[in-house]
Length: 236
Image (cartoon, rainbow, N blue to C red; front, side, top):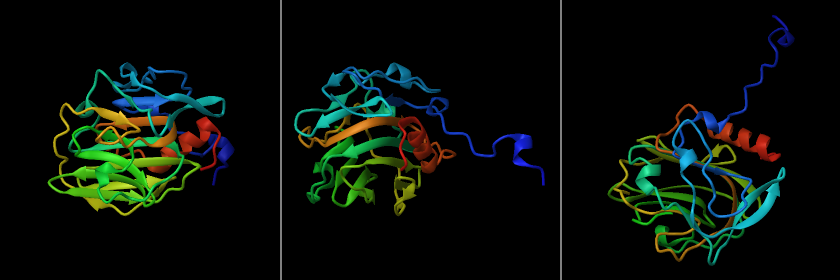
């Protein structure tokens, strides 16, 4: 067997999300609103989060997060609606988040405090003591969930591949949930840290958030986690 030194390192290269076709991507360092979109192989570079408010949060590796107080702060994009970020037949979201605290489920999934939601009520990501929940309406509400802890940074990954909906936290997947084509999200507002009603704001910090309108099937949740660990000097 030839030595590794002959070829150089055999370690897999760290994911660079700029190589992906992303419909939205925002990352630290956050300074103020608008939070400019970060360029990728998709349209993300031209899509700022330009409506609403957020504060400068904690610094990871000298890169400031966007902080949301859970009462009055949230962000939206004035130029692109939810159907410009997500597809009804496939989507992917990955983000690095610290949730301040978790409340018990309300009993109505779309009424819980939102991480990312759309104003039509057919799709969203909420957080409660059950974990991070992604709800997806295909004629009925389908909900995938993975447990998470408050007060610590976590890599959250959500994939819908046209057949199953899966939530992963720190590279570990929850139980896949079968789901059909998502009900219409055309014209709906895409919201960061708020729920369907605009009254369920989540207190949290977001350091990095990537969105795609395909499943990005060849990119694993662990690859996103490795990217976060590398860029933000974490050990998730």
